[in-house]
Length: 423
Image (cartoon, rainbow, N blue to C red; front, side):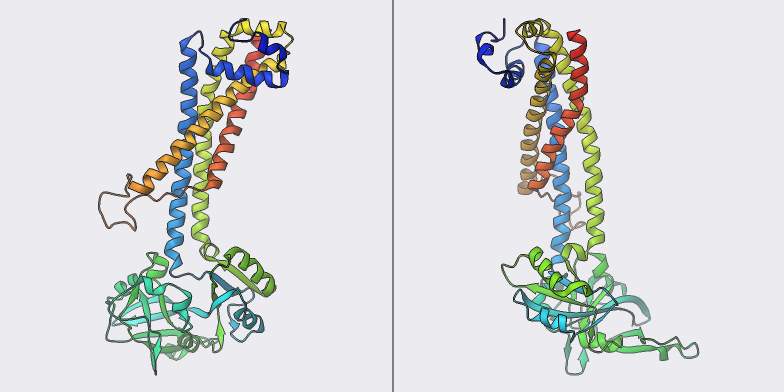
């Protein structure tokens, strides 16, 4: 019998025989060159689809990491908020124990609320974010400040407000402004007096520290003013209270483990959130987009795997004589079907490995050289080139997906074709 099936088959166990024959059919020189070409096209099709999945998922990872980096300078490493009500006493015993925790390096009470800012005839509803004096130790706010001044919250009787850069533009202000901002907030628990509406509002002023911040997210840049905790408590009639507590962990502490331990320590009265959970809306949208892209690419991969069926059908027709010889040697129809199924799996695996290598290589080239840019005009985007981040979990997911889709695309067609040829 040709193709090297002589004596080795007599002593090889049937358990390894199917793989041995499938490997020989794929890598040995075939009698018809067209089969080699079609097999190569099948491998290439799977490889291209696999490469597309790796690159696409890595681009989504890159944008997610980019957004996370932008939030790092503003959002806390961990944030603790009450589950019942909007505020909690800063002297709450659970929070005081949290402040003394061995995992916590910086403990910053924060009070946020909506207010109206008025500046020379311009009005804007903003979020007043009152923070404790150690806010600079807890965050990296000083890394995103612009202007000739410095980050200061209060001095003597003066209260200062650091505006987002877009908010300053909307109010017609520079980083430094001479006239103080007029801040109005409804008095807690009072109805609006129709006859004298201003009497129903608390009023205060914020001076300019000569700087603005830029997170590059409109949620913050166009709607936030950072000021002292005491100013916010006085403005919102929330003396001695905070809406959240922001934490910076000591170096070397794992945020995920710390979050779990602190949540257990605080119980159900409080919710502990990491940076991703604090911006859950943004990251949920990105995860949904990534999932939809993964599903569509999986369908494209399924179509690419159908090429394998054409290669296997031609191979089975070409090997009719070998199939009859194998049956004479005692091979069952199920074992013969397994041979050609293994042939398809080998093609799928070869295409998957080639695609993973090519996809990872393209991502590395983009990371190092930035060949694909965001646009032709510099300065219009936060970054100039598409960001990519290759995750090991995504590589494993793509590999499993390719093998699973390949199995689905091959199993029934090979069985059907084999039954027709064997009959």
